[in-house]
Amino acid sequence: MRYARISIGGRAVWGRVGEREIELLAGSPLQEADPDVLGAVPREGAHWLPPVVPSVFYAVGMNYPRHIAHAGAATPERPEVGYRANNALTGHRTPILKPAEVTGRFEAEPELVAVIGRTLRRATHDEARASIFGWTIGNDISARTWQHQDRSFWRSKNSDTFKPMGPWIETDVDALAQTTALRVNGETRAEFATGDMVFDPFDHIVELTKHVTMHPGDVLWMGAESTCQLEPGDTVEVEIGGIGVLSNPVQLEEERGKQP
Amino acid sequence: MRYARISIGGRAVWGRVGEREIELLAGSPLQEADPDVLGAVPREGAHWLPPVVPSVFYAVGMNYPRHIAHAGAATPERPEVGYRANNALTGHRTPILKPAEVTGRFEAEPELVAVIGRTLRRATHDEARASIFGWTIGNDISARTWQHQDRSFWRSKNSDTFKPMGPWIETDVDALAQTTALRVNGETRAEFATGDMVFDPFDHIVELTKHVTMHPGDVLWMGAESTCQLEPGDTVEVEIGGIGVLSNPVQLEEERGKQP
Image (cartoon, rainbow over all chains, first blue to last red; front, side):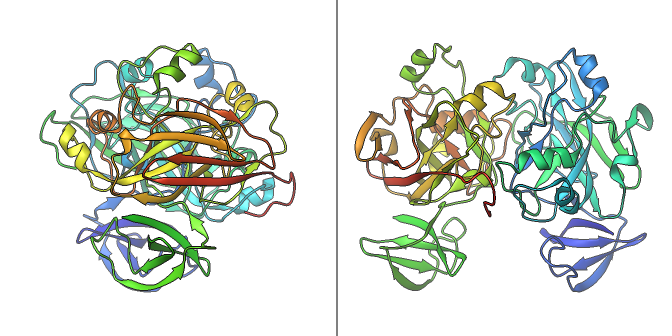
């Protein structure tokens, strides 16, 4: 099943995504097994929101052997996570805004995202597997000059629109058996085995929940093997087999006068 | 005015805190100016929740000159923030659980917390001032061995119960003109001028909102000048004049079988 959140008259509404239509739901599938159907809208032209707004936004850094080797970094000895910020989330087809002040590399990182469906603490590996509500796609936009000159990732990775996520949550897919592809203007820039991770999502959940309670709707972004440069005017797509395609245009943000 | 969130029959309810009673509100004062009053409960024995659960949990690191000098760190040249995680939040009077695996220093850091009341982007200094809904108190519990050995702060600062916040949000106080005190078992361990910061909350909001939209309910923890060691069995209090006292017992967490 594919669940999305779309904007209807400015309100966020959960939907079940079909081939041509989106069935609008009365509640969140993260909270109730089978929410009532309120009606349907055409999928074409839908205003896609991030499929979930997490209570905690977990992000794995170095997690693909080739990325680690390329960065000259040490291979992590155990799973660890950082955090990203909800203000940066944006949905499928909405623009990634490159701030006018950004110089240097402005890059996309295509990531698998696990969406947690249960409250869990001290999870076993089996419980970690069973806790996954579904899978979505993230694009971890990064401004490298800021990333290197700042003490934290606050603006390099968390400026508004730097975290496209979507288009939906797919509940029925063997996500780790898929291929992740990164395309710019239709041209493939990177392609890698989604599951070729140092530590997979279940390893992370087992380690995290030794000390942390995870909740339904929390998201865990799993890192990327490859990145590529983006320019205003580009359209960037991340495809993960069996999940879908997350597509976003890149625009230059006006330096003044932008309204939230 | 003092606004709190308390647990009534397992449900989070907003309240307006008086000398002896808490008036229960039909809605959030962050969303409506004057929510209806549903009734009242005695303040004595209330189950205090964190006064707000933010969409984004901002935390300032090195921000007090004496703390920076003590740490031998460089004085920040501009405001920056990191992030903390909502799972770690806990309310006034609830226990701080020291994980059995923690060795080395286990410390309290007494912090002023700004609670944002408006949606803002590219705020001026005046708009930043006007955006503050009120002020509360945070205790930034830190497990130093983990902090030094891990790549991120995920468990050193974000394990469950490591972020007591409360007891309430005070809307009418000149927070930066106050004194912050840290006490353990009634004995003062630290005392400093709350406003003696390198960059104050408004400086941070102006800088942050150059690239980030802040939202009502977001919190900004402002750092601490001093810390002190905690042991299971202690009661730790943070007092900020004009706001209140945040008090929490410290307990050793059982290594197995803890339920969330």
